[in-house]
Length: 301
Image: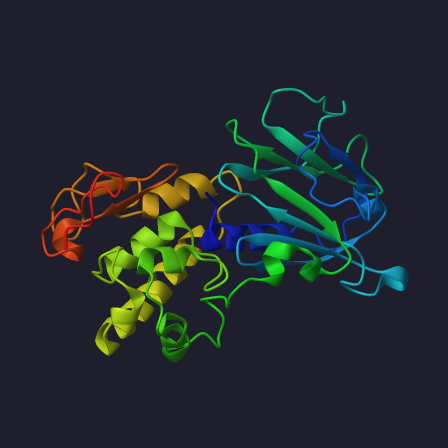
């Protein structure tokens, strides 16, 4: 699943290519990808992109309004969900895409340069697998997207300090893993980077937030900033096609169950849930004790 670092890198990738480009055609392919209908997707046709922003895991592609006023036109907002991705093409195929069973969900065709022959550039939004959760919104204001309206603070924003995190954790009798993934508490962190943050902080994923000591909060904050900041730096300069592999290469425990921990050499373990799993190192995070599968028994403390 693309999370904050990958979406931030995609934002930078598109910010180098989109501003000033005009939308020639919006071509929805999967009927369920569009989550809004007023304004219709065709409202973007003829509009020029003026900027790109990130809100948590959402990409916000802004267009100019009447008279060229920046960011006052409709917004094209994308949430890549678990298996979505963006594929840029310098020259799109001449034939329009056909609905079918493939991964293509939506194509955005941009106007070619005045002296160019044939189709212009553009990008495809694709989604692998059968659980179609990729979401595209065309809205007048970015806060018209419900998921954005309820986002918590961005952990890489300049104002997100150690005390900000302490305030978000205070009094919450929830497991810290789930709290980090809650987009209304902290935006942009998902399953993979919450595993990585907790490993760096040497903290059990099932530790209750309300029970963290001041020292543990300080360590968690440092791990959060270092993990996310490092992932963003590794992703910078990678193309959209390279970002997935780059994310995998940077992981120390997530997705590495059965492999040795790169810090202590213990075997990385996994706890499975109905539709997800977490990965952790017993030596680094739980005092050497493996965590029980929550479907079968309570956590071993």
